[in-house]
Every structure is written in structure tokens, then in C-alpha cells.
Amino acid sequence: MLQVKLFDCEHEQDLEEEMNNFLSGLDRKHIVDIKYNIAMLGEAGDEQVYCFSAMVMYVR
Image (cartoon, rainbow, N blue to C red; front, side):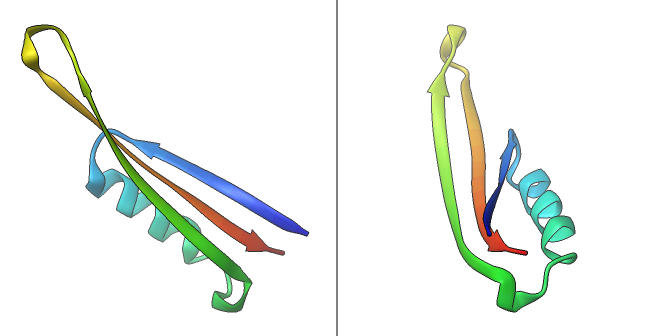
């Protein structure tokens, strides 16, 4: 059965750590695909907020 795991972090290092923890529990042959995205949002005072996200598709 195909499953997905979603990750969403404000810092890319946090995303990397969360994904590595999750992927360490999977056999490489079960990973179907990984999608990665970065979004930048404007905020009051011209401060920029980043959103780093990823989706891992895998089979169990």
C-alpha cells in the first residue's frame, strides 16, 4: 500500500533532521519518491518567512 509522510518546518536544518530520522527507519527499496518545496511569505515590516516542506512517498 502506498503511503505518504509530510514534513513542514520553518528552518531547512529542522526539515533535514526530521526527514533523516524518518528515513532511517525505512528500507531504501520502500521509498518511491521524495518531493521538496520552499515557500517564501511576506509579513508585516517586510520580514520574510520561509516554509520548507517535503513529502515522502513509500510502501510498507
